[in-house]
Image 1 (cartoon, rainbow, N blue to C red):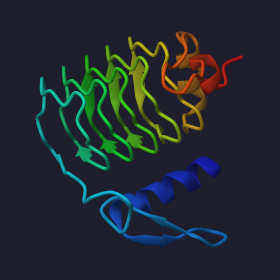
Image 2 (spheres, helix red, strand yellow):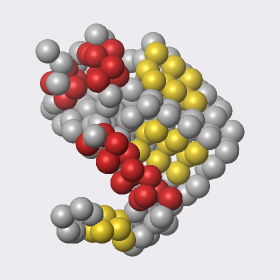
Image 3 (cartoon, rainbow, N blue to C red):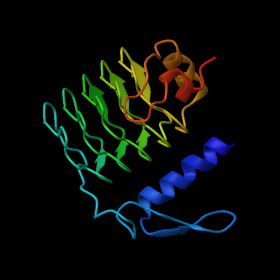
Length: 173
C-alpha cells in the first residue's frame, strides 16, 4: 500500500507541476513548478542514442519514451530527473547523481551504473539486466522487492562520494 501511495504522489508531481499538499500537511514542489531548480529540459520521445551528456547539469530534465542506447551520462548531475518508459541499453551512468529522481518503467540493459548515486530515487517497475552497480548508492531508494533481491545478487563496492556500501544501501542480507 505505501508503494502505491508513493507512486500516485510521484505521478501527481510529474503531471501536475507546482505546489501539491502532502497528506498530514506540508507541500511538495514538482519539477517545472516552484522549486530550487531552473525549468526542466524536456526530451519527450527523443532519440538520443550515442549522445554525450557526460558531466552536464541536467537537473530535473524529463526523458519520456526516450531512446538512450549507448548514451553517456558519466558524472552528470541528474538530480530530480524523470526518466519514464525509456530504454537505456549500454548507457553509461558511471558516477552520475540521480538523487530524488523518478525512474519509472526504465529498462536498464548492459548499463554501467557503477558509483552512481540513486539516493531517494523512485525506481518502481524498472528492470535491470546485465548491469554494473559496483559502488552505486541506493540509500532510501524505492525499489520493488524482486528488484532489490536481484540487485543484491550483484551488489559490491563502496560509493566514492557517499562512502556507503552498495549492499548496505540496498538492505541486502
